[in-house]
Length: 181
Image 1 (cartoon, rainbow, N blue to C red):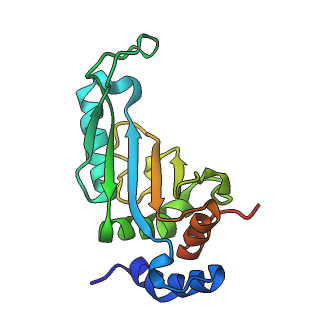
Image 2 (cartoon, rainbow, N blue to C red):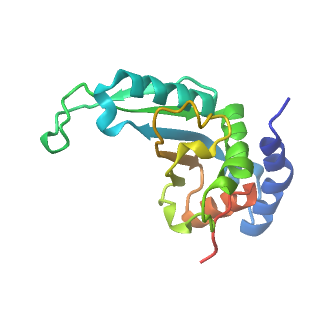
Image 3 (cartoon, rainbow, N blue to C red):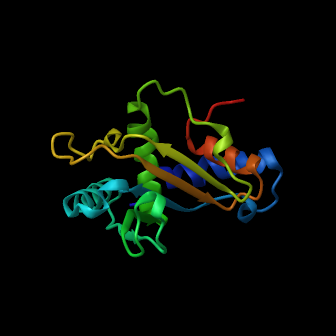
């Protein structure tokens, strides 16, 4: 079965963007490419239980096993040695990407305290939009009683939008609550 958000994209978003930007072909309409979720470990990089906990919780949230990232070079100011664990990340594509984005829009973002919409300034010039989440416990898959530590995470949504206006229009049509400014 096709994800609900993917069906919404095909039936509603494509015609709306074709009308708004005057595209002649459906393939000109910007689309989602991938979603990258990154969770930093920080000072807990020596603690194996913290790393295992972060991997387990990110796997619960995304439905896919995360990759452990390691430091490429030593940085004395951060007490970091080459090869130390820095964080974990997941790259979601196709149906898993749409399922995750649907859950984030409908369930997780409304659970954020004092939420007044996402910033429209978080878009770069190449079609990516990055969201910083301070507490990963906003996702209902994570049991608050079993977590090791509350962590933040970055969610980067990569699109084929060529300008920031195209990217923001696509994400607003999909349903991401981005503020008007």
